[in-house]
Length: 129
Ligand SMILES: [Zn+2]
Image (cartoon, rainbow, N blue to C red; front, side, top):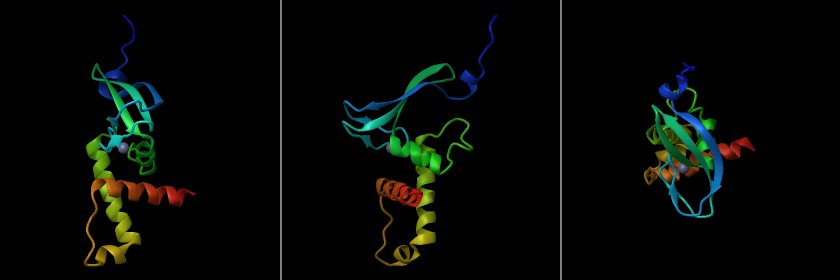
């Protein structure tokens, strides 16, 4: 009998990952927002507990997930729920730390998730340069 690869059973395993250009609209498995036609996106064939599935994501979502070290403790991978929670947390951290004047003002409203995500990504990519 051959060796059993336990890794295939206890955690999601990437069989193949690549970058595609969207020929039709997709949804990102991290942020659940639209991947537009013509946009480059990450595509992976995965297996978890013997089930095969595909994973699609915005390039920038994967990038920010790495920036925020989301994979460090995510032994089962980063799912959309965790991703959204981390982004929302990071957004309020950034506002507290750097934009306190804005969020203290009485006209301030917490933006929707997509705007929070764009803000967090922009903040980190500006800081990177
Ligand atoms: Zn996304």
